[in-house]
Image (cartoon, rainbow, N blue to C red):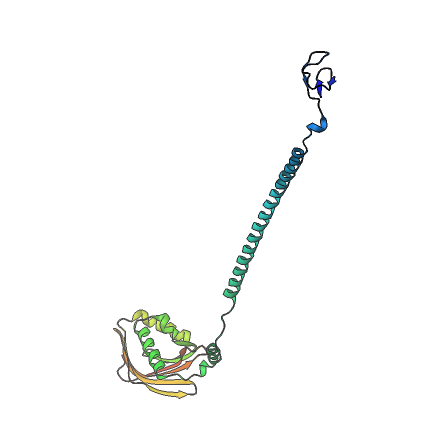
Length: 242
């Protein structure tokens, strides 16, 4: 069957090529159902659906990736913060005490009762002698306890009892006017009075403007912190002082 596209007249004779009314070229009649291509329509729907699915899934993937990265950063941050806090606690915490430390702590409160050994006595006397000869007043004064009481002798004043501050002040004045100081000590005689040590020896002192010789006695005591101090001192000159 053919149809004229101008007058829409149809002809059943397929051998006709032109319309008998207006002479227009005949063609096969238009059939709406025949021109509808269902598979192409279905393919278009499927394609659109797939594209829509892809477009929809892409933001979700990005959101998921961002969320994963955020979780990783949070975990790393928490781990670093925990590590710093742990290090801070360890640094601020007091060190653990070993059994040896415990013994030291218990013994430290009893150091004042620890006997003073001969080697400690000799070390103190040599250091004290060196500070005296070198006129190092600060070091010299450190050998004397705050409770010190001494008896000093001079040609002008004779014997005088002095506290530590008076004793150090007197030595400061003598250091200022003395040059080429030389001090020698004789053999030591050591005895004990309770926890205190009594050391006796002969002392010879000389400088450019003064010299004497006599019997020196010092009393030593160990303090609670273990340091040995001179708590008393006495000097008795013999003939020859000038």
